[in-house]
Structure formats: structure tokens, C-alpha cells
Length: 317
Image (cartoon, rainbow, N blue to C red; front, side, top):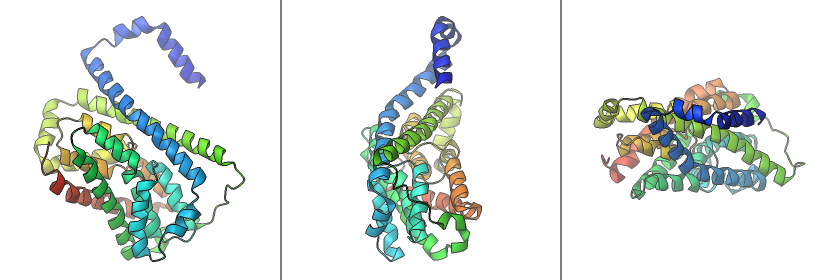
């Protein structure tokens, strides 16, 4: 906070110098794109982290566990649908999934919830509808593609996954935080998620501004003109940028030269597999788990996004 105040004070004192320094067409365009992305996404981000904090404080994982079917085959789709009602960023879903495993929930069920929670909750779907006005099918396609990713990945893990791929430390019971007040749990969770997700929102806004300013339009036109290339590029971009799921729709919408189908792939892949999520999964469940789960999720997400895209979007721009 002192550093932030110092930077703001220095910027205010040197305002005239900074205006002259940054008075360039490219910087003006980039700053406009950056501010538009951040200002549009920030209200939804704040609402999302507040709901995430409330759920963490007032809906313990053991209560969710009691609502899940005992059979993993049925528990996977139920856990996937439960993610629609429990908003939270992908970083917050990892510890919840770990807590479910510690309470003897089948790993496939916990992983389905991990993938669904940040991808199909109401906040994400509303932001997608706002980012793509006049195209409600984008929100529907994102919901179907993301839910399909969570369910199919969960079923595949149930069929082919092995218990020894998950680190033993991830399954040890952690002490409950019952001694803490619910208000403190709420405020700490909301603060953590806002700082974490807000940082990635800033990175995403900067990336969108840079892509719109630094990348020649001919390159984006080339990617947009070749559907297969656009799908691959946007899928890899989703992994590299590691955006928050409550803000990525505005970044995707700002890339006007890219067709809707690659944008949908970007929106489905991003919340379930990216660099920060892979690192978090490796630290929580072990490297052996992350090396198998991340590629599986990546391929399933692309396939499910395309399965949802072509009936609803076709090759729409």
C-alpha cells in the first residue's frame, strides 16, 4: 500500500510530463482497450469474489459432500452441475476439490467440481452475455462446452485414473477452521480472491491492449481466416494468458478479427487449464497428477468446445 500511494503521488505531481510522454496514437489506443476491458470486467469480478467468500464461509465442503450421490458415475454430473451454483475463480476451486477428496469424495467427482465451478457459474455466464451483446448463443455454448468438459474429464478419470497419481499429502485431513468466525473467513477469502483475480485481470487487459496495438492486423486476419489455426492459437493463448474466468470474455470479445468458434475455444479452455492452474494443481496434488490431468483437460476442453460451437455458432464471426 505505501508503494502504491507513492506511485500515485508521483504520477499526480508529474502529470504534465507523463501526458506529453505518452501522447502517442498507439499508446492512446492501447490505453483505451485496457481501460475498456478492466472497467467492464471489474464489477463482475467483485461480485464473484464476494459470492465466493460467502460460499466458503457459509457452505462447508462436508455439507456439499452429503448432497453428492455415493456412486461416482452419478456423482460426476451432479458435481458438474453443482459448479453452476457455486461461483469462484479456478484458484479457489482447487482447495475445495482437495477438501472434498479429504472427506472421502471420489477423486473423479471432486475433479469434475474443480473444472465446473469456475467455468459455468452464473457470474461467468452473465459476463459472457454482456461481453457478446446480441449473441446469447455464446453464453449457452460456453455453458454446454464447459459442463461437457467437466463431466467427460471426470468420467475419463474415473475409468483410467489411478490413486497413486495423486500425492498422498493431498488426501491428508486438514484441521477444520471452526474456531474462526464466519465473517473473518468471508473477508479473508474475498480479499484473497480479489487480489489474485484482480492481478490476472490487469495482465489480461494489458495482453488484450498489446494484441490490438502491437500485433499487425494482417496477422490477426490470417488467424481469423483459417479456422483450424485460429482454434489452436486461441487454445494455446488461453493456457498462456491464465486469465480469471470472470474477466476472460471481455478479453476475447476485444479480439474483433477472430471468429466466434476460436473465441469459444478460448473461453472453454482458459478456466480449466492454464499455467497458474497447472502450477497450483502440481503443488496441491503432485507433479504426476498435473502431468496427466492438464493434457487430458486441454484436449477434452477443445473437443467439447467444438462440439458445442458448431451446432450453435457454425462458423460465425
